[in-house]
Length: 253
View 1 (tube, rainbow, N blue to C red):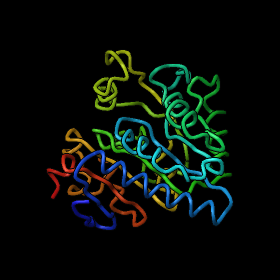
View 2 (cartoon, rainbow, N blue to C red):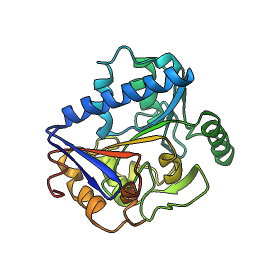
View 3 (cartoon, rainbow, N blue to C red):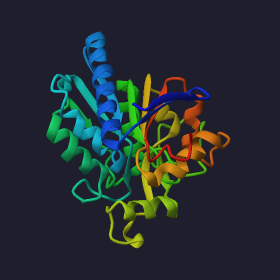
View 4 (cartoon, helix red, strand yellow):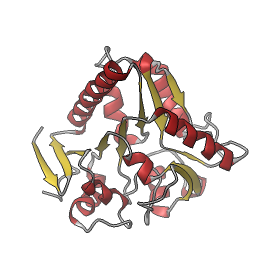
């Protein structure tokens, strides 16, 4: 680690590289879930997809003692109308990169192609309330979104999951990361956990590496906390940690 500091109530850790950030995040994850399983017998977590999570997921392989058989996984979002077999499906990503690799107790997927979206949101809400995840690990979008809560985000909704309309910055990011060929290919709506759902865990770990995140990281840390920059809400969360690498922190310190 290069340094650690605080912005309001948020702890910010800066690492030399994305790889080292991922290693640190995996170590924190392993420690927290192992403690939770030891205390409760089982636990649940909310995990993200996206390129910012790749070094973290890779580093989890270095922790063979993680008690995956006692850990249930939730994820954050899925495109409306998309099946898990689609190459850009987030549920599909979780099945391939996490379920097949680590064999958790359960992977609770959001069914983007469910025929009744209201019923799907009710189902997922009930699962979240039943399992009470203890840890959220997520990223920050280039527009400051958390999950698919694009600006302006609702910081105070009572819902745990909702239908969202994706803005063009978010949709272009999906093309830039290689998930779709063109902007027209990116769905315009998705199911997403809400901001309160993401933050209503005992621990929140946010990973935001790479130079393309430097501008939004500066806004998150230095601009007023606002629904126009959804990730700025992290500065009000004493149980949250933001992990950056040298490139993403370049404009902020």
